[in-house]
Image (tube, rainbow, N blue to C red; front, side, top):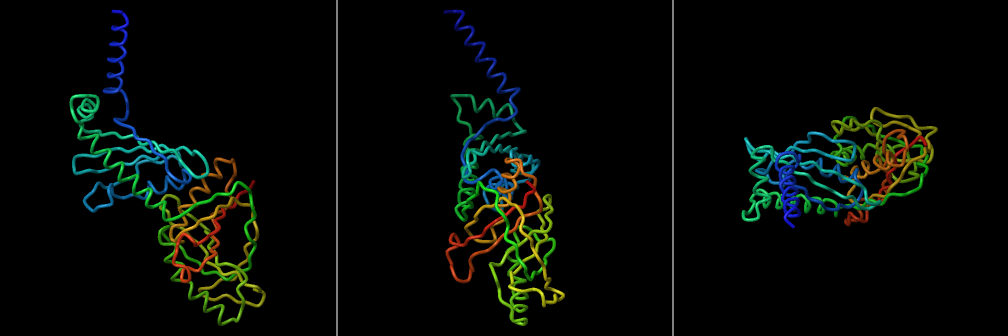
Length: 306
């Protein structure tokens, strides 16, 4: 009996020693988020402040590894910061397991002693729990604004003759605003040339700076006949051939649809496909007609080689 007690004490002491002096992170939280690791990783990386308040901690992305992990530095004040490391794992097409590891570089030993001390309340942990709950609520609120439905099949992008307005170096979050700025040029060209529109408006990304999240894109109207059309300073006449692609359906405000691009890129990597170009979005609904944004539908394509 005495030997068993000694063994148990040794194991407890060894465990405490490992936690207090060796373990990299102070605490771990686990939750589940909607959609794939691509969309979740993007939502996490877009948070700039801890609680969305001007006086809450600034958030800086320190490192990201594809869509598997994301490390952030949270500046609490001039002398105090936290490190958040998010680890993501796809559960299925509609959910992702999210693990958050937290480290406080300052007062690390004091914080850990408070965590394991059953006779002392840990203000550090109470504060962390509150912050993580705020994070989780923010994520749920953001994801409730849209719906992503991936397809398991390889499809073909639509082949279209079209008139296009080209935009350059546009932030992802400014995509919809830029389309609204240029749509009148396309509409005027249609009216002036008395041509018929043969399909849904679409956006084709022609380049994407992944580091700065700046995109070049064509915003286009498919038209029935381009043989006699001549472009202008603002309007180009183009042909978009059909290509093999991965596809998903996005429902929600089109200003948020780029979130789904990250899920498509993640799925391409997971399924062993090589990307062949950047996303295309085909818009089925006119936002001026239906005010319920979750009714708006866009087909999102990512061209692939195989």
